[in-house]
Length: 272
Ligand SMILES: C[S@@+](CC[C@H](N)C(=O)[O-])C[C@H]1O[C@@H](n2cnc3c(N)ncnc32)[C@H](O)[C@@H]1O
Image (cartoon, rainbow, N blue to C red):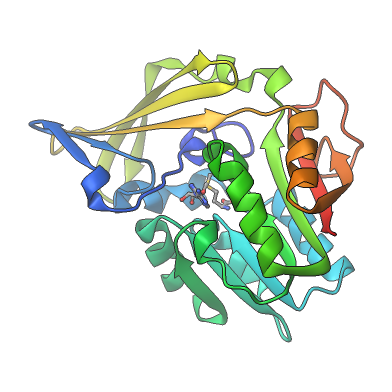
C-alpha cells in the first residue's frame, strides 16, 4: 500500500545504517531493511505520487512564511524539492543512503541540502518548519520516537511549526494489507512479483514482510520492518513532553477535524 492507501511500497522504511544490516540468508534470497535496494527505491515515486498530502505540507509552509525547513525522513525527496523555492532554505534528512542518492539526483535536488541520518543528523538552524511525511513517525520505535521529537524541537526556533501524519491505530489499517496473491509488474530490471504480510506482533506494533521476486534472476528481496500505530492521546502527550503544543489534529488533507473513525491523524504543533 502506498501513503494514498493502495500499494505497499510506502510502508517500507528502513533505518538503513549500513549494509551490515543486510543478511544474505540463502542462495538467491536477500533480506533487507526496507529502502536499501535501489531497484525498489526506483519504484517508490511511482507508488507514491505527489498528491493532497504534499499540497497540505506545501500550503502550510506558505501560510507560516517558512524560510527554513527540515524534512525528516525525506525519502526520495519528491516533496522536499518542491518545498525548496526562492528565498527558502530546505534540508532533507533520511537514514537511507539509497533513498537519498535518488533524492540528490532528481530534478531540483541541487536546491536542497541532503543529510544521511536520523534526527541526530538534523542541524540546529532554528528551523521555522519541520515535517515528517509519508507516515515516517510509524517507522520510529519508542523510545527513539521521543528522542526524534526532542531533537527536532532542539533544532527549531520557539514558535516554529511541526507537521506530520500517522495512521490512526484504531482503524487497524494493517488488517487489509496481507496479500496471498502475487502482484506482477514491469520494472526497468525486468518483471517483479510482489506480495506481503502484516502481523500485529504486540499491541500497536505491526511486523511487515514485503517480498519482491525478480524472476529473471531468480532473486528474492525480502524487506522486513515494524510499524508503530499510536493513538491521538499518546502522540499529543509525546508532543507536550518534548516541548510542543498541539495546534490541530486533522483526519484528512482537507483539514477536517480528526474524529475516531478517521484513518489518518495529521498533527500540527507549535514549538513552545
Ligand atoms: C514511507 S517513507 C516516507 C518518505 C517521504 N517522507 C514521503 O513522504 O514519501 C519513510 C521514510 O522514513 C525513513 N526513516 C526510517 N526510520 C527513520 C528515522 N528513525 N528517522 C527518520 N527517518 C526515518 C525511511 O528511510 C524512509 O525514507
